[in-house]
Amino acid sequence: MASPEAAAILRELQQQRDNGICADCNTKNPQWASVSYGIFMCLECSGIHRGLGVHISFVRSVGMDSWSAAQLKKMQAGGNADLNAFLKKYGIDKHTDPKVKYNTRAAEAFKEKVAAAAEGKPWTCPADIPMGAVAAAPPAR
Image (cartoon, rainbow, N blue to C red; front, side, top):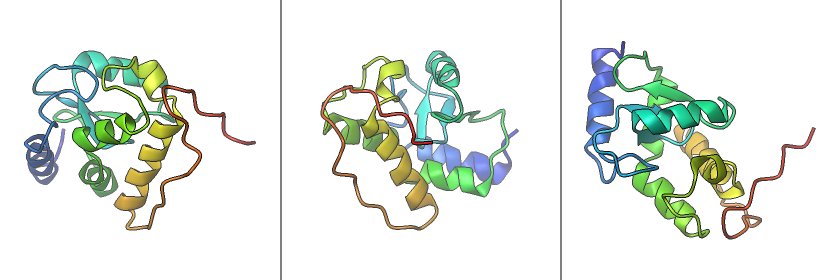
């Protein structure tokens, strides 16, 4: 269960612009989150995110899971409006199938942006982000 401090931070974040509506659909009052992107989502979309794998989207319950300080910083660095505005710049609509949406280079870049901000590190947007829902290249081995 979220500590009282974590619960207060998450409640405050849920009140911010667009965080009261699922990042992937129009369900109101989302009670799940992707720490990776700092976004809030509904139960149904959280199941889809869990299916993507933790390397793409690390999912937590807003009320039932415990939260670390680092996870809360990622939530503060992200935001539903910021994610969808960022992806829209690359032609990726909010309602794009999450299996496609979160496997794009644009989504990967947003995740990197959130991680850098949470760690207090500088971030520069990569120049190699293609337009549209084009799958990200697999990581180099």
